Image (cartoon, rainbow, N blue to C red; front, side, top):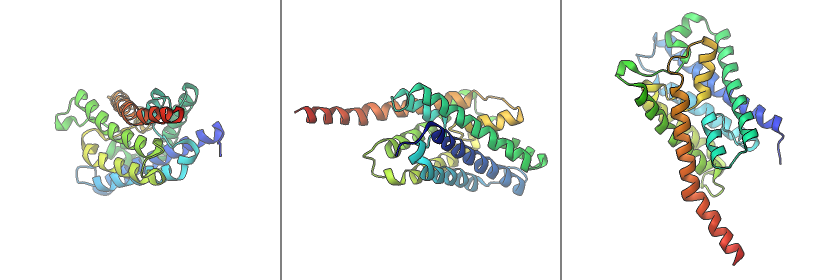
Length: 242
């Protein structure tokens, strides 16, 4: 069944809204319970993000492809999986979903609780001695894994897990946050950083969460497309013409 542009954009909005509402909400909840994030809660936060994405990918993948992330959409555009017009609309829907979720969280949760974790806005772990360049590299590598798994499970029609892509993608989000959460926030997604930053008016090092994820996503998408997808398509074309 073909879905309309409006249906696809609604799916992208809702999926991104869920990621930010549940993901950022979990950060605030853990921070409120522990009086900040120094005491732990990383597993809870990682699972909340992973479950949100896994559920929404499974629920909405058949509608829009379940990008929920400008870095994924840009990777899809670069590899010819989506055109410029639809890609642009997808990104706008994702940013709107992230901003709406952050706005609802701001309205629903007292400022005293949000302030303990800077409203869940991802930040460079300067207390670990990280530079912004190192943060970009970490975000790029984490997003590489994410987009690679998305291409392998949701884009590749021969992927062994095409019907349960949400599970693999959710697991990837979870493992990435377990490693990168304390260092960069492991956003892997410009919309994840944009929504809370816009609502709170906090833009410190915001560019990191565009440059790193977009760069890592493009490398993953192009590599998978060139090395795995295109050779198969070329072989199929040769066999068909033989």
